[in-house]
Image 1 (cartoon, rainbow over the protein chains, first blue to last red):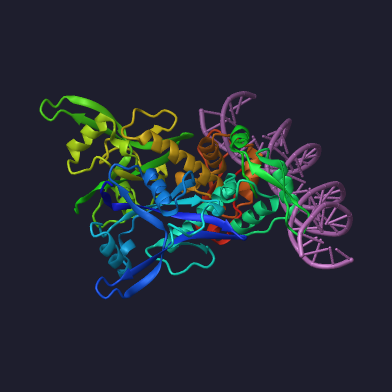
Image 2: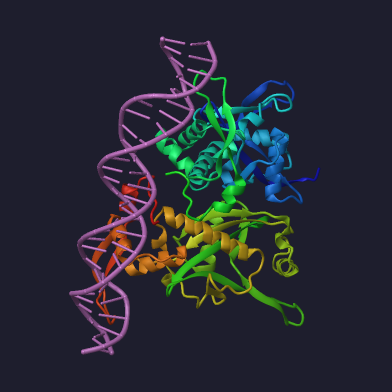
Length: 244
Length: 244
DNA sequence: ACAAAAGTGTTGAGGGTACACCCATGG
DNA sequence: CCATGGGTGTACCCTCAACACTTTTGT
């Protein structure tokens, strides 16, 4: 493994959607006293790592995703770079950093990405025991400036969602209209009329009904759809405000 | 002056608006053979510089603007960070960099900002003889990956302009509706109906008519307006798609 | 008087919003 | 048979787009 660049890192705000809730994937961080093994503090952080020598920025983000979740081929978008000198002002963060990465500088610039994951693809278990989903609305104490990063990532996601059909990245391949509507309502923090929402969908050629229904529920089975990226690319205009 | 951080720079895409044209402020770059003083090559670059030790990112961008144009208090917005390993792949760029900043690394990460300037505030002259405005539509040969940066900056500006009233930053304090319309048409590359455009303006309480008319032209004098940031902040909603 | 840009209202079409009931299934 | 979410159509309003002529000045 090449050396890491001591003053540049990437952080990933990984969004997932479960049970009508938008969540972020966080990793538990624990600092123990090296001698007594007593826990000095513990909190959570985003998935992040320093960029390696000879590595492109985006490669670094992809690598972080892959290492921390095992997932590949994920929607990823850079949204902001954080470079204040006081990013590591909190003594806890500096202590932790020095302990784990002694070569790292005091002033680290972090390029932040957000990514959208079909959360059924990642259950925190097995090889990634410290990762867990937390609802955006009730986050645990976070290290570094990661609170600010999540808030900002959410704003970027909201803007993006209004302009382009990225919501599908958060759903399983096959989904129902109600699932999609819930997703939009949750992320944009609004309510939509069921009939009007379905009318919108009906106008989008890239939301394609398939010969399958969601059965097993104590009500009428729901028609399932897939998102066709191919149709979307062919039919999109620059005029596409997706919703609202 | 503190040492510069050898692998992090900021670049500023400075937009100005003159004579119904959107322009970018570029600086002439010349590389001469140190012995013969013969010109090896010459082209243009954006305004940029490395971040200094102990300096925040945004501070660095403000400093670059101030040093290169003498202007302060300018609209500034970060839009993307460029970090490909081959950013300095072009031999010219590497040659020039080594000559002027021997301490700089081969892999430099550049945080790019765009800024909007009332172009009447900066005429390239006096203390900044190498800076000049170039229409976005006809740029000279550019160094580094600055072409890509400008293209991307323009896309961000277009999105921003549709959502928020930032166009005023490119105009003098007092302006006419026609000037504003031309600005929107130029940046968004469309045409608007004069009457419909004026109706939109009339609905915006923060575009305030003043007791002054633009005289001296061989036609009916035009009403002048100012942009009230104060009124805007008080009346804005999250629902503000500004134009189109 | 003429050129040149400023300024001004109306109409029609389309899209968005509001709203209530029946349907198919599992338990 | 009942509870649960799935699925459907219409009427109104408001916003957006299209369109042509008069006004005021400088030369």
